Length: 217
Image (cartoon, rainbow, N blue to C red):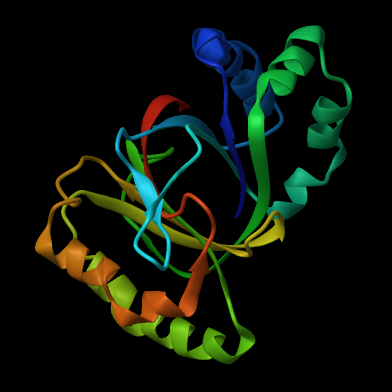
């Protein structure tokens, strides 16, 4: 499967219209051309990424994600036609986006997936790069230790890892949870402090936790 992910900020005066535009225009149009699921998330207050020196960085306020049957769907005419033929409302909303970061992502295994269609209520997102010399060690740890331990977390729905066809950094991990019970769990805290994360170079504002505002289905 593929994933389109868009991070952005926006002036507070446009927040309500932003949600209406997504639910009335963007999501229905993309569902009509075969996208299985769409969702938009708000940054959980107080959440931020951590720099190597321990300082905090503010993550983008909004994350909108679209699931596709294949990454190729993001390059075919049905979707490209929507992007090419923007109506005035569409064009205006894109102009109001601040610091937009757009990712076209391709799913890579392994994944954890439990029952349920569509996106979950909470999304915890990692965005990072790896040095070529560290890729193998990180992948072995991620598959052999990180995912098995993640599967024991309360409320976990899915963990999916993607590589970016467009967008940077290249590595993108989407954790989905039904609630916040995981967040203060000692196991989660220990996993997030694993030494292997030191191999990754997280982008500004990552990792970050988001709460769903609207979604279909």
